[in-house]
Amino acid sequence: MDLDAQFDKVLYRYDELREQLAAGGGDFARQSKEFSDLGPVVEAIQALKKGQEEAFEAAQMMTDAEADADMRAMAEEEFYALKDKLPALKHQVQLMLLPKDEADERNAILEVRAGTGGEEAALFAAELFRMYERYCGLQGWRFETLEVSDTGIGGIKEASASITGKGVFARLKFESGVHRVQRVPATEASGRIHTSAATVAVLPEAEEVDVHIEDKDLRIDVYRSQGAGGQHVNTTDSAVRITHLPTNTVVTCQDEKSQHKNKAKAMKVLRARIYEQMRSVADAERSANRKTQVGSGDRSERIRTYNFPQGRVTDHRINLTLYKIEEVMKGDGLEELVSALVTADQAERLAEMGE
Image (cartoon, rainbow, N blue to C red; front, side, top):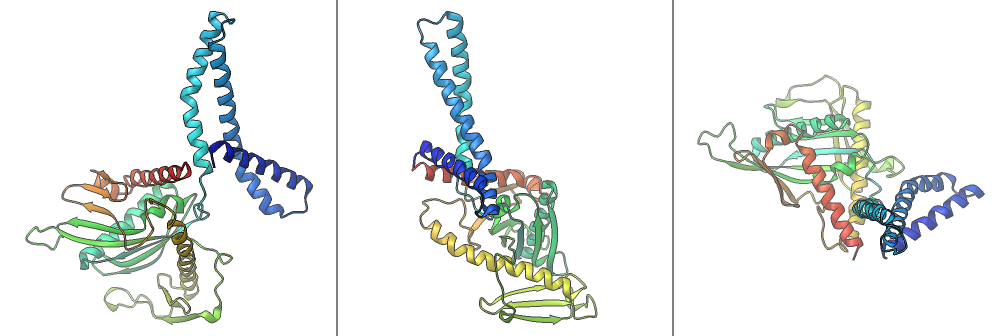
């Protein structure tokens, strides 16, 4: 479908919704939301169409032999000003017309796990978790730790957090995958560079209406919370392990002293994981039709390398290397990578739309 046909389709649907809302009797909430969502798109289309019409009129005036020299000069100035402005307007409309991932506006669950590399992998996983926490703070998002399984000497086996804010999942979804680190561990006497890895998963947060979980499908175990080295964190059975029997998905939470709070946190993660499994099936069907992808979301895919001796971070999906590893690990340098990934994904989808 060419761009003008897409414009006409959007404008027709907008007028249709306006009439339906005025008449009443339909699904008011759904129609009202769709009408509201289309509003900015319609405004952008109208601005583009108006600009195109004005450019056409200015071009005609420029070549009008009956117009005086001053009028032609003004028309020429207006034409070239619009010519410079119209591509950006068109690009904006095209971005707004891209199919939306309905999860983009959702909050997210972040999970970081140590991979291959022993204690060095666990230390790197902890650094990644702190990097995301700092980044979220800079974005004005709320970062709430849900669960941390630490090693006792600064590393983590795995950790999860709930991230709340505007457009969280849209910005962070490309972080899912294997993050590789190359550096000399503090314990390495010979100065040899080691390679280890951590796995990151970013899941859209799911509500109960998205994922219906039957009580009969859950096995809930409670036990005493423990810290590193087997030390008791508290003396009550407040830690919770929930197993979703149909999918064999297991979630544990022991950070809170209240069993009720730990269960609520564990259920939040469980819903997100099951919702992501449901999305993955649909995504696999969609991606089979896509020629290129910035990221498949496959957690086994190596997406980024952090090379400390060379001070560089390389994202392998878009071949972007930044020589600012300290800034990235502090969180403030991560935005450049996130923005580049979002832009690359938009460019790929625009190219597909034009085929």
